[in-house]
Amino acid sequence: MSKALITGIAGQDAAYLSRLLLDKGYEVVGIDRPGRPGAPLPRLQGLGVAGDVRVVGLDLTDFSGLSRLLEREQPDELYNLAGQSIVRSSWQDPIQATKDTAQAALTLLEALRLSWPSARFLQASSSEMFGGAKQDRWDEATPFLPHSPYAVAKLFAHQSTVNYRTTLGLHASCAILFNHESPFRGTDFVLGKIADGVARIKLGQARTLQLGNLDSQRDWGHARDYVCAMHLMLQQARPGDYVVATGRTATVREACRIAFAHAGLAMDDHVVVDPALVRPGEVRCIEADASKARRELGWEPKTGLEDLIVEMVEAAHRRGGR
Ligand code: F7E
Image (cartoon, rainbow, N blue to C red; front, side, top):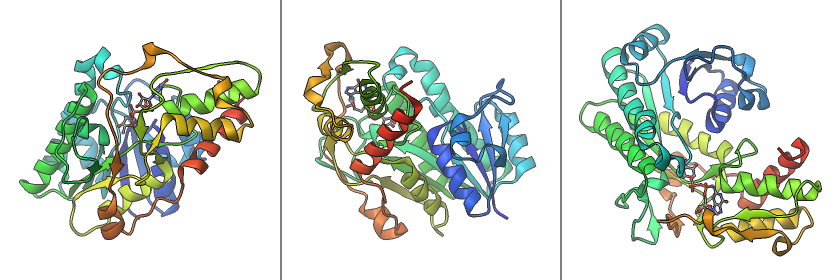
């Protein structure tokens, strides 16, 4: 039986990855923040796997704690999905964001190198690392130009992973993940906020939905599909870096129209632009090119934008708004 260690076990991606790996017969151990022993993990519960994942609490910058954990668990695969994920919040506490994302990844890599180098390592990198890249098509060769403390920290973790692979020979890979969502997404993210807002309007709990830049563009996929790419990456004989995206870019306005139309509502009657929500230094995403993942991994996203949004709106409606 293969064993996987997953950091950030409370998060959306860890829930889908746990489900995938358990279905494949893996033993799954999750790492949560310390000081939350026995705390409920609603996303694991939502996918029916809370009882099947063994959870340990550990600070990911605790080098000796991580080394002891690796020696004890001896995992075949280690997925680093931990870190603060709200880009805007990284401006409020850039030092903590850097510790959680950059220092934690380096500590994991160093503990792996010294204690259990045979494990295969996956770093969850982000398309935010491209930031202000001038190209219209973003792939693995596009130069990085990070725009936020979040993106700078992600880039440090990404380059450290590349470094441990190319210089020290670890089987270490980076999934350069574009936006990926699911019904587990909270209202800090635009699709989660739209799904929640539409459900609340439909249920008569609200009349308007305040949003920022409606012309902003993103490539949105389903988290359930993206964890399949992560798993496939660690099954390859040679490690590497892969863009994980659908290849379809849409505006926030388009996502909104799909969500409101599904609920039988007219977006223009309810959406209000709040200038305070418009981001300065917005990341511009024109087109993501995931052809390397399709070609080398045989990976294909199964869920399109419409189905993703419908799943999110229906889940928010069932929850009865938040
Ligand atoms: O913003 C615009 C906003 O907050 C998407 C994280 O998973 O993906 C995510 O980061 C777009 C932006 O995600 C609102 O300006 C308009 O253009 O859903 P988001 P994000 O910042 O792209 C990357 C790849 C990650 O790595 C991150 O961890 O939507 N937008 N109006 C809004 N965004 C929010 N949150 N709220 C609004 O009212």
